[in-house]
Structures are given as C-alpha cells and as structure tokens.
Image (cartoon, rainbow, N blue to C red):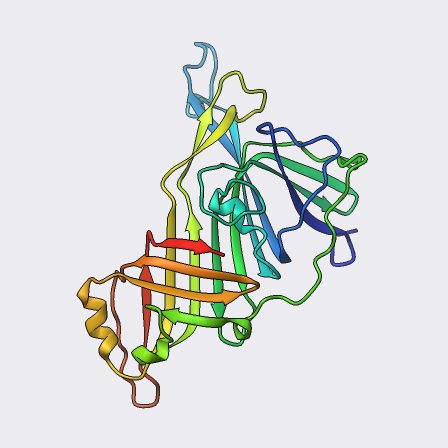
Length: 299
C-alpha cells in the first residue's frame, strides 16, 4: 500500500555537541510551528570516466565508466510559526535560549519518521530562514539546512530511552497580532505610509570543510559560514509621495515591531534596489522597499 495521509510523517531535530554525531538517547525538538511540507533533497555526486578499451573489445563509442564519488543533503522546511524558538540557531546565538546575534555555529541532526521507518541526517547546519508576515495571514517561515551524511533507513527507533518531539500546539502567530510598529521611532502613518506586509531573512553562504579522515561518504568534517546577510522587505501603501524623496536620500533608517513576546528592532536600513510606484485608475498607490545587511536586535 502507498504511504498516504493515514501514515505517520514527522520531522524533528536535536543539537549536536560533536559534529555529525547524534546524541545518545536524544530528546528531540520541534521547530516552533506547524510544519508542512518538508523537502529532503538527496544528491549523488558522480564521476564520468572515459577510458581506452582493450584492443580486442568492441562498442568503442561507449567507453565511459560512471561511479559515485560523494553525496549531499539539503532540507527545506515550511511552517506556520507558533513562536520564535528556532531563531537562535539562525542567529548563531551563544545558546539556544538567547536571541543576541553571535558567532556560534549550531550543528544539528534532523530525523524523519515515515510509517515505521526512520532516517537521521547528521552534521547539519541551518543556512537560511525567511519569515513572511502578510495581511490576513499567519506568520510563515521557510528554513534551509545542509547535512553531511545520512543514517540510511532505520527499522528501529533511534531515540532509545530519549523522547520524540511533541506535536505542535497553540495558535500560530498572525499579522493581526503585530503591535508597536515604529519607523524611525514613530508610527509609520506619521510618514504617510502604511505597512501591509513585512518579510525578513537571515542567510549565510555555507562552504563544506572536507576532511579525508572523516568517516562519512561525503568526507565533510564541518561547515564554514560566510558573512551573514540579514535582509528586510516591506510592502506599503502611500498617503503621500514623501517616501520617494526619502528613498533617494541615502539616509539610514530604523524599523521595529513586537510579535510573539519579542520586540524586533532593525537598524542601519539603507533602502536599495528599484523604487517602483504604480499609478492605476482603480488602485491605491503602493511600493515595495528592500534593504540588505541591516542590523537586528531582539528583546
């Protein structure tokens, strides 16, 4: 029978203290939201080897051998967020309970359960999160993580005397829950613009650190994170055109809001890219704003 909606499907994770080693008897964690879907991309790195056949052999137009030389794993997770508990892993915070931006790389193992089969991806690191808050919507997050190896399919539960993550519960955060929105220290309406969507993201360029002594097939012994890019995008409707002048001024701005018990404060915002105003007979005047490499504090 096919695996369908009646079968178990779950995903969970746990921090690793030793790279690519899942803790013994782990207490697995959820992601802080209602997860679906999860996409696990498994890639085989292969080598094509053209060669000279023996003198007495035939079929000389097909003299290429193929073999696997490595493998790679990437996971993308979509969820409607209940809380912000996943953010410390993306902020490289000192630990999983603080929200101060730092330089601590948190390696993880991620496990799936499908039917009666388990699989654990090890030696993982989150490379990106994008959070979207739009009118008449719950707060959506998209996560990306890279992994060094897989356990393969397991037919016995890997947690031992540990525990699986509980099912998520509680209300998802929503656009209507946002309070205390400030732009340059004042309500955005003071600037005659009205925010109807906010998107922010944290992303890192990630490079594999190879180790020929590593025991996994990929020979990845760790991950090196490049410079963090924290970006911000707003969608707003206009009450006047003063933002056009402000956009072109090159001045830096601040923006903040409170949601889910956390106050987000973005700083060093330099609006860049294209400034587009659309004039239509039967629509409001709206504009997108975007900035990269901004500052962020969360309290």
